Image (cartoon, rainbow, N blue to C red; front, side, top):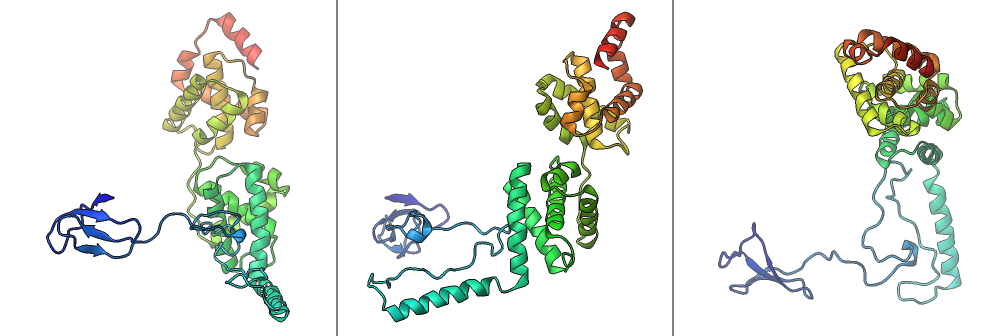
Length: 321
């Protein structure tokens, strides 16, 4: 097999054309035959399978993960009854190996911190599936939880509360549109306790959490209400104008996004009620109605767009409200 190394030259003749021997792993110069490298690292699969690796010939194992208590870096003693040559071990050696396996498993869970991590990350895995979150967010939540465990913040507090607050903080850092209500319902815990735990993590760990913008919630609400792409773009334009005129200051981003989407539905003529949008956004109809009035009152461009004949306008608004 002929290969070319652009950055490697033969130290004997200075040429760059090399020949690779797939059997011996040698890399030689094609011009003068000088051996550049005698051995090459094997990157292909194994030639035999290992039962403890679930019948796979892959050379590498699972990647390290912060969301596992040992980060997939521990080693286990095999439970086979044969040695490396395939011969059966004596009964005394088998008994010794079984006791070694027992003590090895006990020693791994001897530290209280590891038992805490096992329980927390099992709960984190279930919570991730309920909220349909990515692995990157789970890794970030596991990192925050490990930092809290190192500083002793978890002592005397519920593991479920702290791991849920860590996952919420990870969503805030990655600007993932999830609300406190979503976490409290998925974890079946009170929102007050979750808020308290999140504030504690934010203060003690000095988390840098960006501000959540309302446009992050538009795709989620629109998909739940089955709104067209044209209406989504119109809602994003409304939010952009609202930010420019500083109407969004101090407003809940979820409620503002719901009101902007409802106003976009009014402009495009899609039949979506305030109740449907409020249920999809997780807010009340009163919130949607109040934010809708603020947007329609303060945005001059939207007032011009909403200039309809008086009779039709009254009929339209009566149907929509």
